[in-house]
Length: 242
Image 1 (cartoon, rainbow, N blue to C red):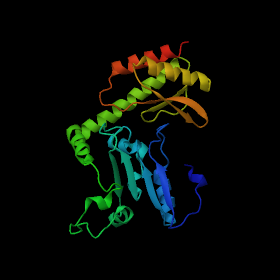
Image 2: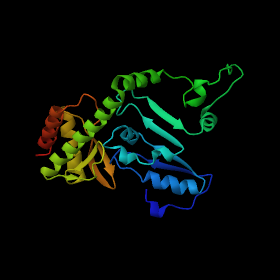
Image 3: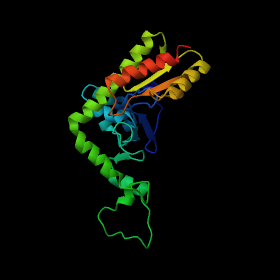
Image 4: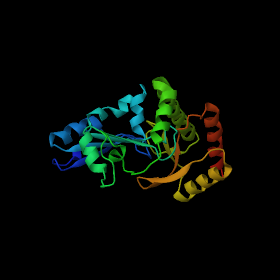
């Protein structure tokens, strides 16, 4: 998002900023956008599917500068926290606004608790995914979570360095754990992706970013090691050597 192109908005506006684009890992200038939007009375929501977690890692926290000034936040736990897929987190500075947005009612429903869980989530009935999220955070602790984020971001940088050294074009600035690489034409890039997937050493998907077809490398698994990175990079380079 370009701050210099920010329009005049009002108190009926929701401004959605991004913390860690799922393709490039990029962050909007959140601190500055919050200040501008709030000067108009607008609400700022942070889409932090990936990048909210950067705030937990000392070496990456500068990327998320300003997220604390927003009004609501959402992030995924199935990516970096490695818990089941349908695990998501949402936070709102205004608890009543969250309840009004999510709650349902019915004469047959008991409403006698101070906080009824289904009034604060998009699902009326859901599995207790909060347990898995709590368990992962409890097991990792602050230092373990920071290490997981720093380590996988470092591995992403190693992928980018190896691909550039081999003469391939890395399309994004690798600031987080996402790498986009082109192997030439769209057809050739898709062919390399197919060969990598059929090889089975690692799995990389395809995407289109700013009009360019690319292989998307996303490093987030807690079990990924330096050896895995080296073997995977060798597999990708072999797949691109035809």
